[in-house]
Length: 139
Image (cartoon, rainbow, N blue to C red; front, side):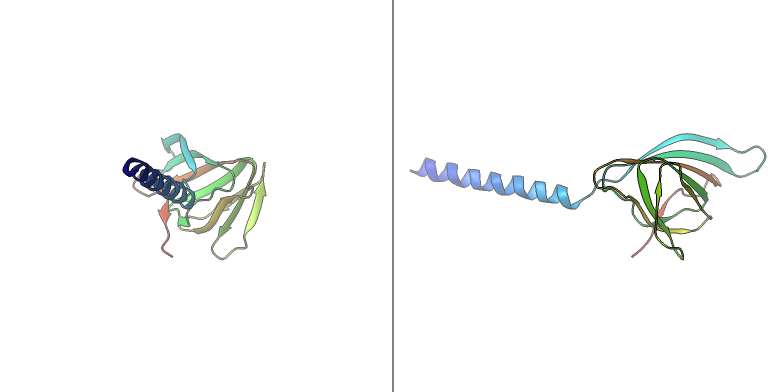
């Protein structure tokens, strides 16, 4: 009887542990995948570099609110991306569409517009080598 109670208690603890781990996993969304394609100093613009990155969003995935120290231009390679820069309306861009963000712009929304399909962006930036590509915004 003791062995049966011990086994039942062990299974209950195991079930709670697995449930807690699954719940914790669901509440923390992994960040988008960012791949640096090119990072080159600009010979005709001393002190600046060009950076080309690819941003992959899984279905329903989003970026944290942020700003860039450099100038950014984004092009939707596939899917649809919803974006909002402070002072502008939220807008959804589809494959082949693009937008511009001035240096220092606060990017309040950047997310995959679809809950079922992935989305991919190509981003081109111009910034100084010491400038940060992305700075998280405080609430």
